Picture (cartoon, rainbow, N blue to C red):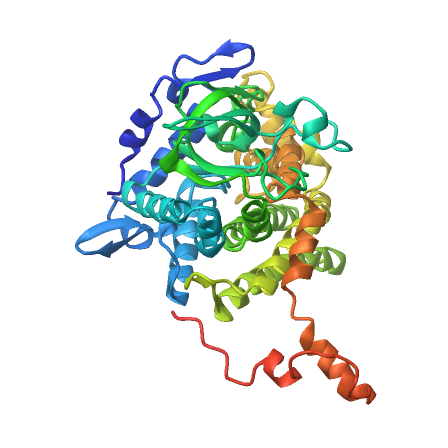
Length: 499
């Protein structure tokens, strides 16, 4: 049941309480700060129906079409299909969006792998996760993920301060659990539902804790209020800030004011082991989509920088080529990790095919930890004009337009209008408030850097190097090594990526 864009838009006209800039939003789809990104999400839904893109965006099962992005991965081909679908979206919308559903649904697949953990508490919880995964595939909702709490004083456990600083259960009823607290969530104001779960925090050392809770939240539920940061759309003309006005994904503080979560939507509750499991494996699948979006951002930086040096005739200089090569190395490093993670994919505990975890997580560290350096290199290659160029109105004004044409026309190929468009695109990509927001988001969107490295530590194959050095150094048999190096490295030919 793939939805249309109009069906999605109508689905978020459900009485939800959303606030931005000190006002209560009457209609999210038409509000000027939400409309651009809502229109993009609606466009993605429509791409699933249109003839040129439908083959990339959907798959058929039992005579019915479903979204490729929401499909459970069982084969390598499923991952190549997801990658092609995301690339088709980027090309169609002319940019990169991060929180549009297909990159967050994978977090539920991680809990699908942990059904044995859920069964320790209540077999109904593992049944709930299976039902919700099936519902997502069948009903095609805009599904996001709620992780980060306000946290308060992190030197204290939540029990020793305002308990609402971390989302927690305050009451059980026959209908479900009542929760209080708050979560920060990108895209919640215009999404249908969120997988809500504990963040990286001390929810208590006891085996059971009211803070160790995970559930599917219907974002129109009574008691939910969303207070959003100011959007970038509309602050300045779109001709001067095309990305700010088109691709801003609004973040919100989602407040749970005694919200009822029906039992059928509860995925785990009062079980710290389940909470620890989901935090440790949360990005087992979703990191793939996140890193792929980093690849798209790298392509945007390369394209903007390369166009500029070619416009100005600097692309033949060795120093310029060296910096372009650094951008290429960054880009291809991301590409290599994504490709290898699928090529050497592993079966998950739940029988799914997960990207090779060590390669996926090291790819994420590579993409995120070097992003700021690559942005600075791209700034250098774009030059100082991205921060001093007059606005579009000066290029159109009768009195100033002749000067703009004179000083911004480069040759017969690159006239002043194309020159201005490239410079404002690069400015919005690299220098604007929106660019700074994206950089911080890139750093923290899938948890902070220490957690990225922690995931690498937990998933890297330490046994192989230990065994290699044990043999090379001639260490005694009493020294504990690991799996034989040949087993760790792999002796079978690597599978070839399909066309």
